[in-house]
Every structure is written in C-alpha cells, then in structure tokens.
Image (cartoon, rainbow, N blue to C red; front, side, top):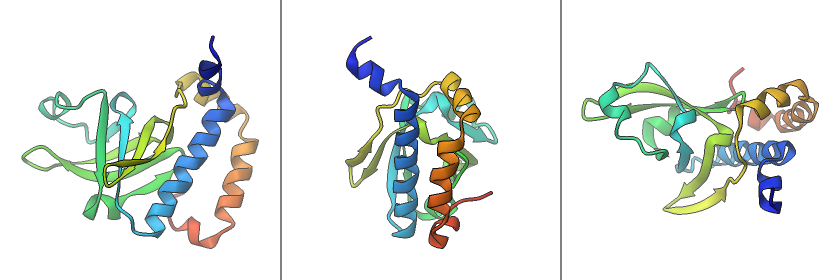
Length: 154
C-alpha cells in the first residue's frame, strides 16, 4: 500500500475530513452562501425513491447545487447532509440524504473550495461508532457555540 492510500484510508483522516466538511457546510448555511456538492451517487438515499427514468440519468459522481428551496431545506443530521429537491421534468420531490464522507467536493461558482480524498467505507463507519469519544468531543465543541446548534437536527 502506497503512502497516499495509507492516508486516505485512515479512519482518523476520514473523521477529520468529515468534521471539516460539516463545519464548512454549516459555515455556508450561516453566511447564506449557496454551494454545490459533488458526491458518490451510490451512497445517496432518496425518500421517496426516484423513478428509474430519473435514476438512470445520474453519473457515479453527481453534482447537486443547493440554492433556493433546496438550500433553505438543507440541514446536517448525524453524519448526513439532508435536503429536499425536485427531479426530472415533473419536478419529482424527494428528500436527499448524503453521507458527509461521500461528498467529494464542495463547490462555489464552479470552483472547488474543499476536496475530500478520504476513502469512505461502511466497515470503517461501523468501527467509528465503537470509538465515538473523539467525535463526541468535537461535536461538543461545535455545539458549544449556540449559533451552530440551529443548523443541526436531533
């Protein structure tokens, strides 16, 4: 395994990237700054599920732009960015849940302002839940600022 692979597959690196992604997204919520996310579509959940005709149009890396109602509906819950969006010509409404670590880039005006190289693995996510002390401490410091709590749903 090369040096880069050791870094991007490291659980602590993934936890740091997740924290950075969350803090940057909440910062943009506070500044009312619209942004795009480039994410792995295979990790994204839609509720209700999208019709197959719409699903078929997604690429493996898909860009979602959060603006207008989509931006207003967005929040961070647990390790997910959640927002409501309309898809296809009928504007089929669905609640979109994106794991923070599945966000490969955060984009403003076509320029990436964050690039995430952490290699997201479900197995690592489960191990992380067993050792949540560091994450809980970082969340406590994050939530100690009362301004931040309004961007999170319990």
